[in-house]
Image (cartoon, rainbow, N blue to C red; front, side, top):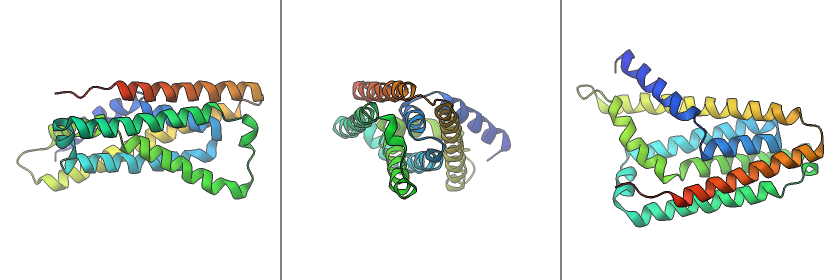
Length: 208
Protein backbone atom coordinates (compact mmCIF):
# COMPACT_ATOMS: atom_id res chain seq x y z
CA UNK A 1 0.00 0.00 0.00
CA UNK A 2 1.34 3.40 -0.98
CA UNK A 3 1.63 6.23 1.52
CA UNK A 4 -0.66 8.40 -0.63
CA UNK A 5 -3.42 5.77 -0.56
CA UNK A 6 -3.10 5.35 3.21
CA UNK A 7 -3.26 9.12 3.77
CA UNK A 8 -6.38 9.34 1.59
CA UNK A 9 -8.01 6.57 3.65
CA UNK A 10 -7.03 8.20 6.95
CA UNK A 11 -8.41 11.59 5.89
CA UNK A 12 -11.66 10.10 4.57
CA UNK A 13 -12.08 8.07 7.77
CA UNK A 14 -11.45 11.12 9.95
CA UNK A 15 -14.13 13.10 8.13
CA UNK A 16 -16.61 10.25 8.49
CA UNK A 17 -15.85 9.76 12.19
CA UNK A 18 -16.10 13.44 13.15
CA UNK A 19 -19.72 13.60 11.95
CA UNK A 20 -21.84 12.73 15.01
CA UNK A 21 -23.87 9.55 14.77
CA UNK A 22 -25.53 7.23 17.32
CA UNK A 23 -22.16 6.20 18.78
CA UNK A 24 -20.98 9.78 19.36
CA UNK A 25 -24.36 10.77 20.79
CA UNK A 26 -23.99 7.89 23.25
CA UNK A 27 -20.41 8.86 24.12
CA UNK A 28 -21.26 12.52 24.74
CA UNK A 29 -24.39 11.74 26.75
CA UNK A 30 -22.64 9.20 28.97
CA UNK A 31 -19.58 11.41 29.46
CA UNK A 32 -21.77 14.31 30.57
CA UNK A 33 -23.54 11.98 32.99
CA UNK A 34 -20.44 10.23 34.39
CA UNK A 35 -17.55 12.66 33.90
CA UNK A 36 -13.90 12.11 33.00
CA UNK A 37 -13.75 8.55 34.34
CA UNK A 38 -16.00 7.46 31.49
CA UNK A 39 -13.49 8.37 28.75
CA UNK A 40 -11.44 5.15 28.79
CA UNK A 41 -14.31 2.62 28.92
CA UNK A 42 -16.31 4.53 26.29
CA UNK A 43 -13.35 4.85 23.91
CA UNK A 44 -12.42 1.20 24.45
CA UNK A 45 -15.98 0.13 23.71
CA UNK A 46 -15.99 2.14 20.48
CA UNK A 47 -12.63 0.67 19.39
CA UNK A 48 -13.76 -2.92 19.99
CA UNK A 49 -17.15 -2.21 18.43
CA UNK A 50 -15.65 -0.76 15.25
CA UNK A 51 -13.10 -3.57 15.12
CA UNK A 52 -15.93 -6.10 15.36
CA UNK A 53 -18.05 -4.34 12.73
CA UNK A 54 -15.15 -4.02 10.29
CA UNK A 55 -14.06 -7.62 10.80
CA UNK A 56 -17.60 -8.90 10.24
CA UNK A 57 -17.83 -6.75 7.12
CA UNK A 58 -14.58 -8.06 5.70
CA UNK A 59 -15.64 -11.62 6.50
CA UNK A 60 -18.73 -11.15 4.35
CA UNK A 61 -21.52 -10.23 6.77
CA UNK A 62 -21.89 -6.85 5.06
CA UNK A 63 -22.74 -8.55 1.80
CA UNK A 64 -25.17 -10.85 3.60
CA UNK A 65 -26.87 -7.86 5.24
CA UNK A 66 -27.20 -6.15 1.87
CA UNK A 67 -28.93 -9.23 0.50
CA UNK A 68 -31.01 -10.26 3.53
CA UNK A 69 -33.77 -7.88 4.55
CA UNK A 70 -34.67 -10.11 7.53
CA UNK A 71 -31.17 -10.12 9.05
CA UNK A 72 -30.75 -6.41 8.40
CA UNK A 73 -34.08 -5.75 10.15
CA UNK A 74 -33.18 -7.89 13.15
CA UNK A 75 -29.89 -6.08 13.78
CA UNK A 76 -31.51 -2.72 13.11
CA UNK A 77 -34.25 -3.26 15.69
CA UNK A 78 -31.86 -4.63 18.31
CA UNK A 79 -29.73 -1.50 17.96
CA UNK A 80 -32.76 0.81 17.94
CA UNK A 81 -34.32 -0.72 21.06
CA UNK A 82 -31.01 -0.65 22.91
CA UNK A 83 -30.44 3.01 22.07
CA UNK A 84 -33.96 3.85 23.22
CA UNK A 85 -33.41 1.91 26.46
CA UNK A 86 -30.17 3.81 27.15
CA UNK A 87 -31.92 7.10 26.40
CA UNK A 88 -34.75 6.39 28.85
CA UNK A 89 -32.25 5.29 31.49
CA UNK A 90 -30.18 8.46 31.10
CA UNK A 91 -33.27 10.69 31.02
CA UNK A 92 -34.36 9.25 34.38
CA UNK A 93 -30.89 9.51 35.98
CA UNK A 94 -30.75 11.94 38.88
CA UNK A 95 -27.60 14.09 39.25
CA UNK A 96 -27.29 12.92 42.87
CA UNK A 97 -26.65 9.43 41.56
CA UNK A 98 -23.29 10.60 40.17
CA UNK A 99 -21.79 10.63 43.68
CA UNK A 100 -20.77 6.96 43.69
CA UNK A 101 -18.23 5.48 45.98
CA UNK A 102 -14.93 4.24 44.56
CA UNK A 103 -16.12 0.64 44.91
CA UNK A 104 -19.04 1.35 42.59
CA UNK A 105 -16.93 2.76 39.76
CA UNK A 106 -15.77 -0.61 38.35
CA UNK A 107 -19.21 -1.93 37.37
CA UNK A 108 -20.15 1.53 36.07
CA UNK A 109 -17.07 1.50 33.81
CA UNK A 110 -17.94 -1.98 32.60
CA UNK A 111 -21.46 -0.91 31.73
CA UNK A 112 -20.19 2.12 29.83
CA UNK A 113 -17.82 -0.12 27.87
CA UNK A 114 -20.60 -2.59 27.07
CA UNK A 115 -23.04 0.09 25.95
CA UNK A 116 -20.47 1.72 23.63
CA UNK A 117 -19.51 -1.66 22.20
CA UNK A 118 -23.07 -2.82 21.54
CA UNK A 119 -24.20 0.43 19.90
CA UNK A 120 -21.08 0.56 17.70
CA UNK A 121 -20.90 -3.10 16.72
CA UNK A 122 -24.60 -3.75 16.11
CA UNK A 123 -25.13 -1.02 13.54
CA UNK A 124 -26.09 -2.85 10.32
CA UNK A 125 -25.61 0.30 8.26
CA UNK A 126 -22.00 0.57 9.40
CA UNK A 127 -21.29 -3.08 8.65
CA UNK A 128 -22.69 -2.71 5.14
CA UNK A 129 -20.89 0.63 4.74
CA UNK A 130 -17.47 -0.86 5.41
CA UNK A 131 -17.97 -3.33 2.57
CA UNK A 132 -18.41 -0.44 0.13
CA UNK A 133 -15.85 1.92 1.71
CA UNK A 134 -12.76 -0.14 2.51
CA UNK A 135 -12.22 -1.89 -0.88
CA UNK A 136 -11.80 1.49 -2.59
CA UNK A 137 -8.42 1.83 -0.83
CA UNK A 138 -7.12 -1.65 -1.62
CA UNK A 139 -4.36 -1.80 -4.23
CA UNK A 140 -5.33 -4.67 -6.58
CA UNK A 141 -1.73 -5.69 -7.31
CA UNK A 142 -0.61 -5.94 -3.68
CA UNK A 143 -1.39 -8.64 -1.07
CA UNK A 144 -4.90 -8.01 0.25
CA UNK A 145 -4.67 -9.25 3.85
CA UNK A 146 -1.83 -6.94 4.97
CA UNK A 147 -3.63 -3.98 3.40
CA UNK A 148 -6.86 -4.85 5.19
CA UNK A 149 -4.97 -5.10 8.47
CA UNK A 150 -3.42 -1.66 8.00
CA UNK A 151 -6.75 -0.06 7.05
CA UNK A 152 -8.61 -1.69 9.93
CA UNK A 153 -5.94 -0.68 12.46
CA UNK A 154 -6.01 2.88 11.10
CA UNK A 155 -9.78 3.19 11.28
CA UNK A 156 -10.22 1.77 14.79
CA UNK A 157 -7.35 3.93 16.10
CA UNK A 158 -8.95 7.06 14.66
CA UNK A 159 -12.36 5.94 15.98
CA UNK A 160 -10.97 5.50 19.49
CA UNK A 161 -9.21 8.87 19.41
CA UNK A 162 -12.34 10.57 18.09
CA UNK A 163 -14.54 9.03 20.80
CA UNK A 164 -12.01 9.92 23.50
CA UNK A 165 -11.88 13.56 22.39
CA UNK A 166 -15.66 13.84 22.37
CA UNK A 167 -15.83 12.19 25.80
CA UNK A 168 -13.09 14.45 27.23
CA UNK A 169 -14.90 17.55 26.01
CA UNK A 170 -18.23 16.35 27.39
CA UNK A 171 -16.60 15.33 30.68
CA UNK A 172 -15.07 18.79 31.11
CA UNK A 173 -18.44 20.31 30.32
CA UNK A 174 -19.94 18.23 33.11
CA UNK A 175 -17.25 19.30 35.58
CA UNK A 176 -18.12 22.91 34.81
CA UNK A 177 -21.75 22.27 35.74
CA UNK A 178 -22.14 22.35 39.50
CA UNK A 179 -25.89 22.89 39.83
CA UNK A 180 -28.09 19.79 39.95
CA UNK A 181 -30.77 21.42 37.85
CA UNK A 182 -28.30 22.04 35.02
CA UNK A 183 -26.98 18.48 35.17
CA UNK A 184 -30.51 17.13 35.18
CA UNK A 185 -31.28 19.20 32.10
CA UNK A 186 -28.20 17.84 30.31
CA UNK A 187 -29.11 14.27 31.26
CA UNK A 188 -32.59 14.71 29.83
CA UNK A 189 -31.28 16.34 26.66
CA UNK A 190 -28.80 13.50 26.23
CA UNK A 191 -31.47 10.89 26.93
CA UNK A 192 -33.78 12.52 24.40
CA UNK A 193 -30.96 12.54 21.83
CA UNK A 194 -30.34 8.82 22.38
CA UNK A 195 -34.05 8.02 22.06
CA UNK A 196 -34.09 10.09 18.88
CA UNK A 197 -31.10 8.13 17.58
CA UNK A 198 -32.98 4.94 18.36
CA UNK A 199 -35.99 6.17 16.40
CA UNK A 200 -33.78 7.15 13.46
CA UNK A 201 -32.08 3.75 13.56
CA UNK A 202 -35.47 2.06 13.47
CA UNK A 203 -36.40 4.16 10.44
CA UNK A 204 -33.31 3.15 8.43
CA UNK A 205 -34.25 1.44 5.20
CA UNK A 206 -32.08 -1.21 3.60
CA UNK A 207 -30.38 0.12 0.49
CA UNK A 208 -30.69 -2.13 -2.53
